[in-house]
Amino acid sequence: MNQYIRYGIYKPEEIFPFLVDQSLVRDMKTLGIKHADPLFKKATEKNYDGHSVKMYSTRYHLFKKNLVCVGCGMRGSYFALEKDKKAVADRCHFNLYGVNGDKEILFTQDHIVPISKGGASNALSNLQTMCTVCNHKKADNHTVKLSDEQELMCLIREYNKADEKATKLGTNLAKVSEALWRSGTISLDRLLELLPVGYASFKLRALNKKQKILMLGEYE
Image (cartoon, rainbow, N blue to C red):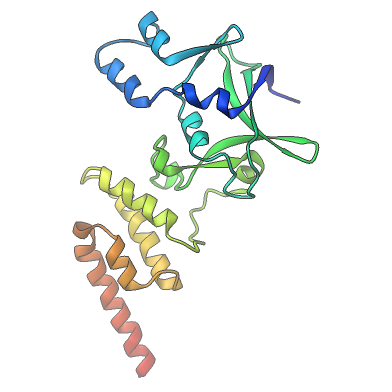
């Protein structure tokens, strides 16, 4: 059973040109302009067939960046203006949908590095477009199964932005880095090239030491 009340269907080109940059939202908040202020609403909302829609959602910006599910390759083809049937507030939003045969598939934003594993919650750098079918299949286990360096690079970006006390991020970065190296997915030289200089100063000495031990073991 559908959980949404639908009011209309819109093409991506009817949505994307009117998205509001989130930096504007931050600036207005800094100036003390609150969400309920008419000035805030005028600057950040747009009317679609009598329904006022907030146009600064992170999801919308993610879908503008990529309409294709990273899991199965399905393309989101249209937006539906909808309201959750259980929502108390009379507020509509856009949901992205793709079509598989005769089935309508809802799209969502997926965290590349799960929040539970230290990933940033709303940073575009840690989000990817995914249909709900693929999203439901994905387990939150952070097992390293990479054929490229996407997850590692995302962790590095978040680590670089965090303060020195972000030990959880540092620990996860260490685990992923070592797992990639041990599995042969990435060479030690490439790891040296990618990891932050300050971070690598002690961690890679340990990796080098382990590599020497492994090499000695092969020749004994």
